[in-house]
Image 1 (cartoon, rainbow over the protein chains, first blue to last red):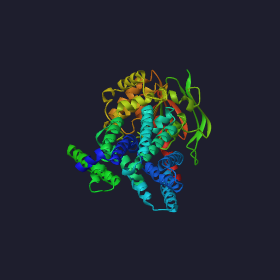
Image 2: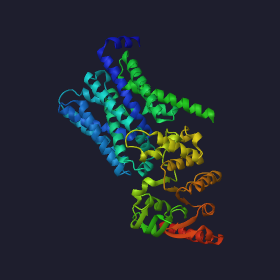
Image 3: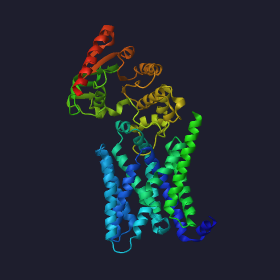
Length: 275
Length: 245
């Protein structure tokens, strides 16, 4: 572990990875809380996996992966949002279709691109150690946009998540806020893909907030605790993976998953004692 | 007297057989109307029409001098079942504040005035001391009073409650209706119930619904009439079960 801190002090790429993890934690703490309380992790999963389609196309045409990931995530979020507002009954199936079709498109475009396909793995499982410095600025900007929107519409989002029918009766533009919420989830997915890759996004989006929700009963404190937990998981995972040279994204998820499991057992045990 | 709800031969169907047929109803300002009827009699559908969530297939619905959708802002609604998960991380006070949302500017949070109105609503329904409690920790009766406070925080002219006491114990049921009795001097109240015997001691008029509507004032309501009213709907519901089955 001391080797990690030594390297962190001297190595540029490790500092960028560390900051990238912290930036990702802000988005994942805030938006992950909405994903958990509104129970839309399946929607978020659909968005994340559909993004591979956009990244594959970008890869084929030699464009920047992060900007095309943003475009793909927004398109996926709006399609999924529109589908789930329009056809509530079959939304489940349609999201599953988008999920896999997006991935299929991505895999085909990547395979058509000449050269060695090492990038596919880093899209799927992330490569926090390879984040370009410029992507940090994009991540920080996306964090800023997410925080601004949540600060402006905290009460509106809370009401829409809590009781959609009541919000509608109060004349709130429920569909607008729902789509805005999914848009912010899409931006979060893009930020998190940099760190853990699109397959593991769901874990980092839901686990910190799910742990926080076990101990806190208000949304704003859950967001703050989830952000702190996210920061602990990303930097802890990064540190643990360094010396044995393990994949950083997967290690981060293992740290988060283990903590969730332990927390689940502890709260379950505490509840049984109370009864 | 001034009718604030007018239904003119309202019919509705979800695509199959009619759920409501030729319903005519006028609710005067200041009335406390009980809407009773067996399960599947169209009570909830009628409420959805009054709230503007459904359009009548034929006929006309007018609320507070306009269409139901226009009147929504002045209607306080207490749903039958809480539509939200009980572990949702929100306090009773936050839920009641949401009643102010339609009045708040689109952007940002609540004003001091909104907090004061929400406080009054919480005090009035005797749940002020529960305001910091997570909703998941409330009893059925407490939750129902919080939802009533949320509806009051909208400062409604018309209060609509859908089976407000369906899932709570009789003691809490009495508390809720005692509260409504106090509120009726300030607003028109329409309450849906299946318990005609219980609500007849509180309401000023009872409307009995079973696809069609029969109206009776409480003064004319005798034991014999309750028998008569309930006798026929019960037969009809058996009948529809046979048809459906």
